[in-house]
Length: 154
Image 1: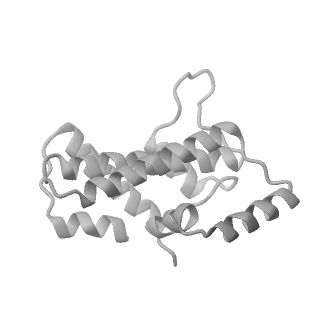
Image 2: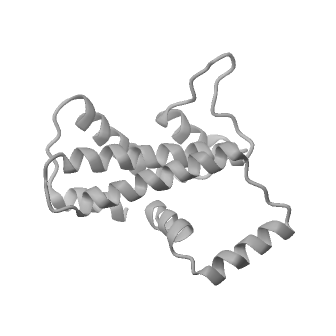
């Protein structure tokens, strides 16, 4: 099974110009149209993923772990919201101005038949990233370099 991080990188970064044109032609022929909000959320996801990778690879350790976890968590949340919207789901509860959070995105991606895009292992992996982000954001987190590297390969 292909891992989430690998899928994101392949989908967004691993296409030659020829492949991009071919994908665009197939989408055009099939009537594929992405909503504006989906495009914006996907772009935000990619931006956060790229920043997360940049922070992971930077030479200074100052704030490195926290930045990687926060940006990676944000990248997945924006990607999940884009997928939910693209598949016809909702990211806002009725009469709410705020969109759903990370946990609700994972829950819908795992169990909502209309938008299902995660299996149990993938859901556990992203929940682990979210828990580590919470620890980094709200308290103290000590995580070693090898453990941080594992997050990007799961």
